[in-house]
Image 1: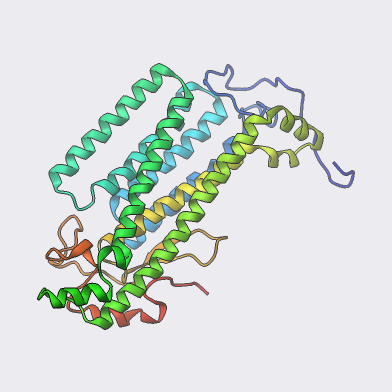
Image 2: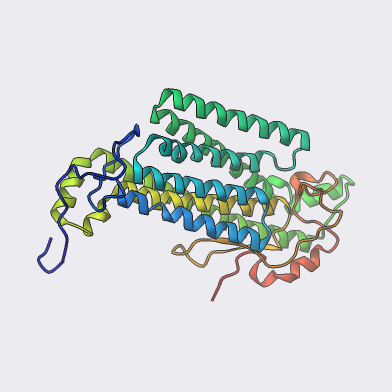
Length: 361
């Protein structure tokens, strides 16, 4: 390091620690107990505070804006991932490794339930819930027997890809006018066929414009979340591949500058943000499926802040919606959202902002 930049040298390798011996089946590139006697991997530990903070922020948002309870449970699972990882990297004990890794599976299954159970009969929701509980129990038992981290990583990756693809499908078919058959040509076809036309041309144009803007912003959120998640994964792999080189560099530059070369810590920060964005995206999608685009909007001023779904008005809670939030549309294709008699009033309520993004000044 330059002489003018102060630094503290790393201690010799093999420092004693409070939690000895190590019982985990994984060992990361960060050296053990170099900064404190009480935490094996201090940077890998502290970076999990991102999960804990964002879980608290998410639960508070759910309670404030009236999001579905399943997302509060998802944020609690997200918190357990961060807390389990915090304790795992502090202690390097096998039980905490299981808490860390298995909660990633459990939370993803919660999001799968939120997506797959939507608008399903109560009996189907129960069967799905039982299946996912049994699936989690099987993964837990088999992983404990196998003790192979590759098994956990493959299962988590497959679950994540499946639920993201499934959610993207729901988003597209609910918002894109060409897929839900709400373009002008579809309205004219229904008129020629003698079928009832539920909305005026002006209201249909407004809804299509509004939903295309929502779709654009949601795709931006998907791209942002996936990019930052994959970026963290790439840095983590560099950390694994070039571990000996990174350790040498850290020791050359000293502390605290060497902390910035802890690749697994960056993985925690970046995947924490990516997973948080996915839950926010899931919340927004649920309100869209409920036909509540006019009542819930995404606040996301720029890429240097995190998005939030806020309630801007109270959605109707009358007979137009079933108990599980399904839209009662008398069979109209894909639920062209919120087509009620007061639709034009809703259209004017937030029309200047295209009924979607509300920027904070």
